[in-house]
Amino acid sequence: MTGPGGEERPFVSGFVGIVGRPNVGKSTLLNALVGHKLAIMSDKPQTTRNRILGVLHRPAAQIVFLDTPGLHKPLHKLGEYLNRVAEATLPEVDVLMHVVDGSLPAGPADAQVAERIGRAGKPTVLVVNKIDRISKGELYAAMDAYKALGEYVDVVPTSAVQGTHLAELVEILERLLPPGPKYYPDDMVTDQPERFVMAELIREQVLHLTREEVPHSVAVVVEEVTRRPSGVVYVRAVILVERESQKGILVGRRGAMVREIGQRARLEIERLLGSRIYLELFVKVKEDWRSRESALRELGYRLDG
Ligand SMILES: Nc1nc2c(ncn2[C@@H]2O[C@H](COP(=O)(O)OP(=O)(O)OP(=O)(O)O)[C@@H](O)[C@H]2O)c(=O)[nH]1
Image (cartoon, rainbow, N blue to C red):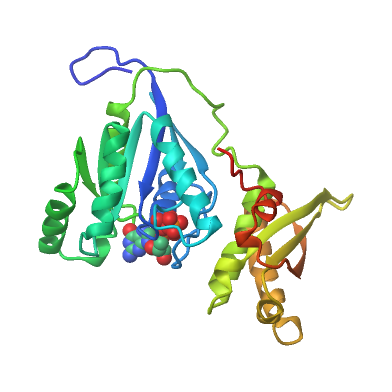
């Protein structure tokens, strides 16, 4: 590739950490940047539990994004785990994107996150997201207020849902990355095993369709994936909740809720795999799984990292 001055630009690559408070739009941004649905999105905070890796392939660059659970005050063991994943990401990356919600005023919690990011000492781009919700005047004020919280190499206003300024953001990230190899093959967009992504798609429907206190006490485990001779892929998954009452809500009247979750999730999984799916869903009670380390381990949350 040739640079603006006619000089040869070497191929660049590296890791970009997407960090910020819960619900600011990190997962939506990752999906929009990479062009695939990797991380689940919902209007309920703390929906991202594991670190999701998404790879953007460009003619002269490979950008590997690490999405993290939102940084927040831990309320229970799962909360502590989420914070640890986010913190552990900071030293591993070449560049950080601090994502903030431009439609909300900058507050003390944003300042805290900015400080933690600052301690990592990495070049950081401030991404002021959700600008589709605010006027130009409000945007300038928001950019100034957020910019004052830390040291940023650049500031980009974005709308992850409308795709605004994402190309500019990618260009800025490319400029910040060092020359390097392709870490991943051209056809790879995520390192998430398909089972995990399937489980996330099911959990996304649970979050969409249920209210009250059910969502945070839900985990989904995909137990079996088999391709049948007919070409249909059989998927068996279990939705784990903490209490009988929550199981009741999720199963619904005569199984109506779990059927609805299954139907919607099946469509998403079919889109992901490009084949027909037979999805069988079960709801089980696993008491107090959020507070028990062994239960968290069984579910695949690594606690010792
Ligand atoms: N209007 C608007 N809404 C957005 C934008 N980006 C994200 N959202 C919405 O904000 C909500 C949260 O988005 P997520 O991408 O799940 O946020 P997150 O930061 O990954 O959240 P955690 O997983 O909790 O850390 C969802 O309802 C999104 O649709 C945006 O640019 N504009």
